[in-house]
Length: 51
Image (tube, rainbow, N blue to C red; front, side, top):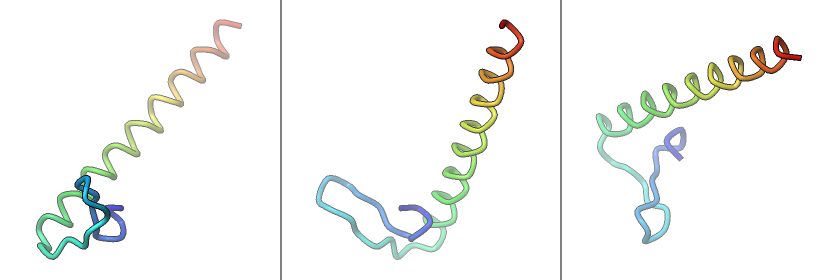
């Protein structure tokens, strides 16, 4: 949703009109994706090394 510039606040999807908020949400979403990828890579590597 952040990539589309929208959010869901329990009343359905709504467009975000504040440009600063859109930028902040996109940055946060990017951090979440990077951390998820790193976590998955570490768990995969650990699993392969334990075998």
